Image 1: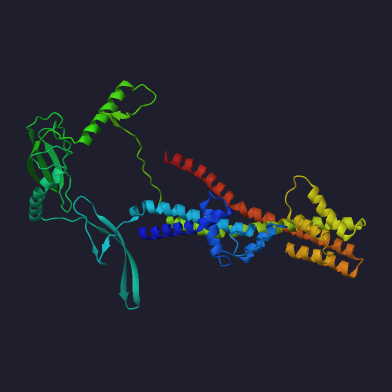
Image 2 (image 1 turned 135 degrees about the vertical axis):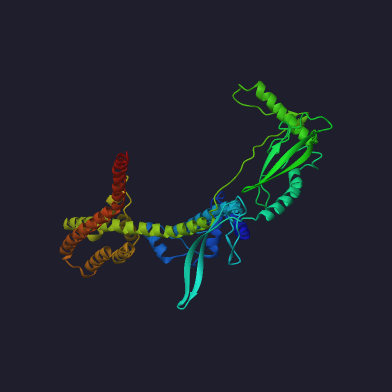
Amino acid sequence: MIFFYGAVLFLYIVVLYVSLRYREKGSYNKRNFFEGMGLCIYKKFYGRSPFYSKKAERHLEMLHPGTPAGEKKRKNYFCNSYVDKFYIRKISLVLLIIFIGEVFAILLCLNSQSGGALTDGKYIQRNTYGEGSIEADLQAEIESGEGKNHQDFLLIVNERKYEKDEIKKLAAEVSDILPDLMLNQNISLEEVRDKLNLVNKVEGYPFQISWESDNYELVYTDGTINNEHVKENGEVVNLTATFIYDDYREEHTYAIRICSPVYSAEELIKRKVYEEIARREELYGKEPHMELPDMVESRAIRWTEKKEDSSGYLFLLACIAAISIYFLQDRDLYKKAEQRNRQMLLDYPGIISKLTLYMGAGMTIRNAFCKIACDYENEKNHEKRYVYEEMLITCHELNNGISETSAYENFGKRCRLPQYTKLSNILIQNLKKGSNSILSVLRQEVVTAFEERKSTAKKLGEEAGTKLLFPMMLMLSIVMILIIVPAYFSFSI
């Protein structure tokens, strides 16, 4: 896996290198390298799925009325359109999440490996003495007359046992091995200056080994050597190792010579530093902080703190999360488009009522339409209402010389709802045929619109009740727990 992670990291470096040329254009935040990488990928795969979706572009156009989408040409380094920004933001977010997961995965990849119990398809290696039994969760494929049958088995394999003669033989082997194991960093048992390796167990042998020393002032049972005050000729200490296996006991004694320590130049400096720190601790122990020495025996010291960096192995989860977030942004965009449509449906009865009122007062269709849009524009701190934004666009088209028929037709197409398409058809039909019955048609449409709004409000209320069902069930569960648990303990008492 580490090679795979290295390949992913190399790919990031390549994409980053290619994206650096976009920095000269000043088309994105130079501090955000992931945005530059997202721009590079978007330009490379522009127009291909999943880097382009007509449905998403339609939703974006609905959510940005009056804002030009921008001309998209592959020769351009960057198009400052909301469509481009939407996809580049999505890609840069995915790259960031995968990169974080990549870093976490590389740091702890080596710790995620573990071996299984079954080897060669039919062997389970027993543990040696003292390691306990093995629990193996296996599945067997059993042939039968009707075909192959799969069965699950949970096996407990006990640790290995030895015969008495075999134990004696193994004890002799261990007694020959121990002197070499005990040495650790020492030259020989006749010249022991550093800590001994008094093992409690030898790999591949079933014995538990316990140690005893005839001079605990010089040698402890864990192998620690206290030879600071040992004379030049050294002192002999006898170490007794007891091999234990079930009821079997066998002792072996080893004579070792403890010699005075020999320090290298680095070790002497280290001891001097420790002594200086101990002296300062004794003198300035009541100070609010401890000052470390910066000079020992004319040698400058620069202190740094060792820090361990550990994190989760989350590369795969990060990739899944990044991809999910990439596509969930389309889902969020779809929800925003749905909210926009719902808002326009709720505003439809008000639009129809105002048109009917103004035209009944003697206004023309154009004046009534622009009056509604201008009242919305002149309102201070108003909430963004998409239908009124579309009406403002229609008014700008009319002021720019576009015919009323074309303007109302464009209005119906931009709204993309059958109610507003019907409204635009009513207005266009009145302009073409000059019908005098438009007021009666609008009044009838007002009645129909308010009925639809009532049904929409009822539907929203049902949806809200459904959303509250889970919190209510959760609260009920908590209340039941608060009632049942005290009652249970009271019965137990």
